[in-house]
Length: 382
Image 1: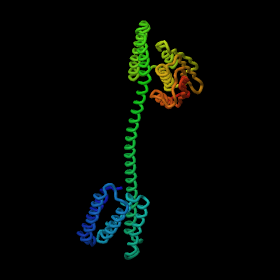
Image 2: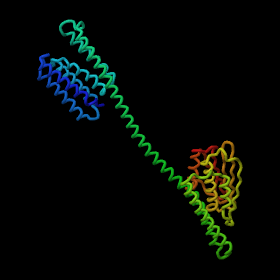
Image 3: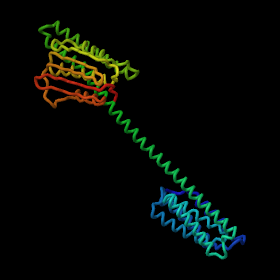
Image 4: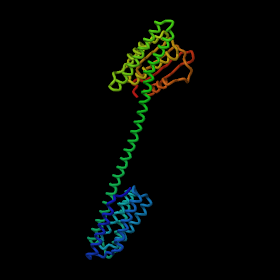
């Protein structure tokens, strides 16, 4: 992590001004060449490091640059007559906190304080009896503490901002995934609805038109009735489409399975071959609309398959709504079919049942009729 870019240059300029003033005013002996050269080298290291590693210096280059700075700090401090250059050493823990963490920064701060004490010990006299030197040491220690605290707070704030930006990126990615999955789920739902609604009515129209064609010469009256029934089935298909559009634009009315199934059975055109009966027991309360809709779609699909594919004479639809689960059975006496020959309708039926925690069972065989059983749990909310 890159340190705050303005801290080091401000301190370098302050030390430079103090050292030059001390040398000019005769307050101390400042050796201009190593003093200004060392500060210039420090400026150059900061500039090169920011250009080479704009996002943050890697560990080993950070160690090398820190060692180079410490050496230059020592050179500048030795050449400074004002004595203010010791303040440069607060940059050691400050810089290390961004590169290596707070623990390393605290250890280095303690080491810098120890170096200053060692320098006092090597000087003449007992420094700890000199109030000015003790005050300078205390101020230096306060500077070290403030440098570590400031660096730790800035590093934590940057890490928090980085985590927030990463969270935003992940949230945007998750939102895109959710939108994609929602679109896919909606496409599947629309496909099932088209198959279940329009497919059911169009199957009835096809069967009735086939009947009209077959009876056109033998029984024109029967053929005309089949055509009229086909017209009614086509109008019901159109009504269902309009109802679906209104449902998408406004809040739909509460769905009643008993009413919907009764209308479904009553609306079956009598083609002279298939009779559909309904048995309904139990209370719908406690079952969610998704579960009840699943049962209704299954009844539609079962009746459509029996009429179109099984050539059945009778279809029996039975619904039992219990305390814990609801069961729909659609049984016909048609031709049946061998295992493994399930079309899109049965696939969509299984998907609907799985979404509400239900299951689909199919019992059929060539010449043995078909028995479709759909079971959904009470509630049935996905």
